[in-house]
Image (cartoon, rainbow, N blue to C red; front, side, top):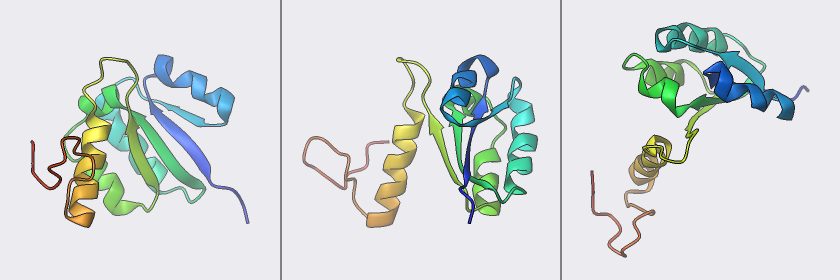
Length: 117
């Protein structure tokens, strides 16, 4: 039994440091190339985790992430790469949890379940 690989996809200058902690780096300089790289990853059986930079995802063609998730059982998550990030990953996770359990577990003001766009 082999250990699944972890990959990081995004701009080379942002993802190169992950190589030092064992990630396979998949540099993508143009968001239009993201779909092709993700398609390649769906065909690999040795990959178990894919991290993507928030900036490459923000400019990617619509539906690329959803297509990957429908074709692969690999865990895919988007990670913020800078302090003033729009928190896309957090909001995505929050919505997924709310869909799964029916309430907003991340709401801070005690009114769980209310939608706040």
